[in-house]
Length: 367
Ligand code: F6R
Image (cartoon, rainbow, N blue to C red; front, side, top):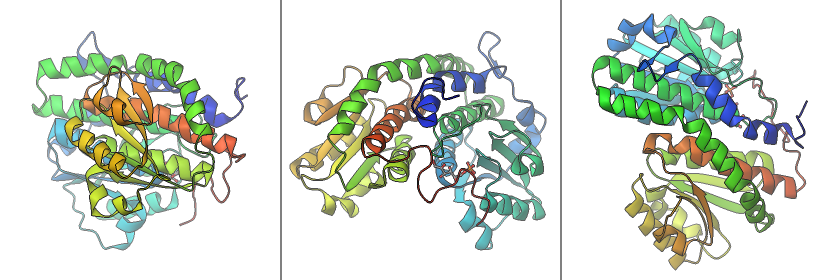
């Protein structure tokens, strides 16, 4: 049932061209120029009149939520807050019936997310669910929602569910933006055509980085720390890259917005510190170039995720992972794939049980 792959995690990483496609199936209708999502459309007034959207989640799903914030604010211009469910539920949050709460959960069973939703519901907020497991507890208590349709995710470390969550959030942002007039028709059309081609780009990245990430992984099996840096849309992608590495390889890793480096983490950088930096051309590239210069001046080992044909960052980096060029908003989907592979191979070479990491459970049904 692992389909010839050594682990579920690797199988699920390789399923992403298909799972992202499945997430869009029946929703993204490029020829007709529309995004069809009944859960949004049936409640469009709620979204239109919302004072703000609050996204609630844990772990990887929370990282997807952060990217959702960038997407929804950029394209639909609705204010978004993203909260850890565990913090939200215990801090007496201000919630009104003008708030739309979006819960993101692969399993649909996460106890903290569930409890946070119950609280928001009591206060009269409209609750939207983005779940992978059909008919799960969270899916059942929401007022409406969209399933990610990524298929069962067996590996404890979330991979294809994450890229499916990003796909749904992208669809929601574009749909709301188109509807409320913040996203013009020409830009909408060009974005949705590009989105339709993302599965192909994921496929390409899998082909071009599978061997490369294995070779890079071999050089880092004895590392004790990693930093992951990115800016804009790729800041949450850096958080997610770091989470993947720590949960399956047990190497300590931290994700940071690249510019925050000089406010603390730079003190950690020496020749023993590997730094994964996500540096596509369309995301504050010049700023990232200076961040890489600062790292190299301190002899940090740079593993750079760059666009094909990149020159400036590539010339300074110790390892270069190329991904295809996309609009900035799609880059976390594509950039996450080699980071999943890198974490996977580092963990495998360290002899870790990647599908069932110690101390972790697939659904966290206790707080
Ligand atoms: C990370 C991971 C966890 C989950 C988190 C939320 O790989 O698997 O961080 O993302 O426990 O789980 P769901 O999405 O099921 O609510």
